[in-house]
Amino acid sequence: MGSSSQRKRIAFRRNFHLLRALSTSKSHAKRRSVVMDACVYIYLLKLKLEAIKREYSNLVAIKEEYLKMMNHIHNPNKEVKVEKTEEGFMNVRVRCEKGEDTLVSVLETFEEMALQVFQARVSCTNDSFSMEATTAFVSDDPNQAQLDVRDVTRAITNAIEKK
Image 1: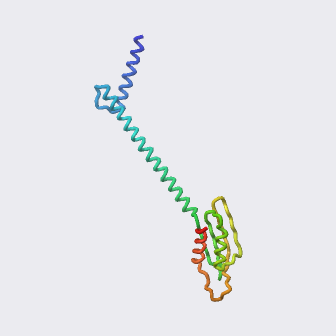
Image 2: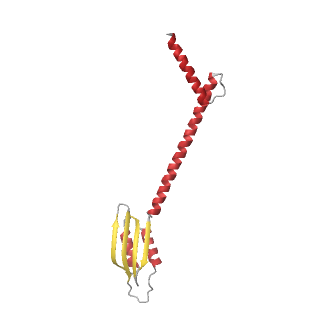
Image 3: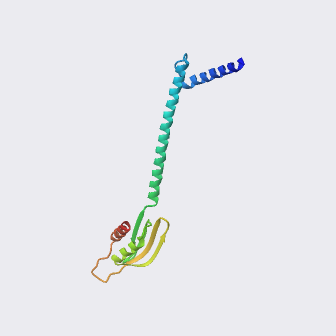
């Protein structure tokens, strides 16, 4: 039976020497100080681990924000392009987030500005609206000035924002 306690003592000494080596203890004589140094070392390792976890979560948050920004840059919320093609004709391209009355708002804006739609292509997905239209300025009043591309762009943008 003495061999069992002897094996335990040898295992204890081996573990104690490993603990002393890992904790970089300066006191080699007392077991209590080695154990205390090991506890302090473990506590410091826990603090370092928490700091690394915080840094990791910050980096993940930064990555998500970056990806969101890149997605926003590549898929802007709203885009209105108006190009003048011939005298009185304009190509209008609208892309924006899907809303309740987006098409109605854009068509009412065309009507208010005396633009007649000759051809239009509209598509809606789960979250976006897009429209391409060929319009012409039609007015009964010969003194009314021609529309500028900037005016049409501004009016359609306002209509999309108000919807």
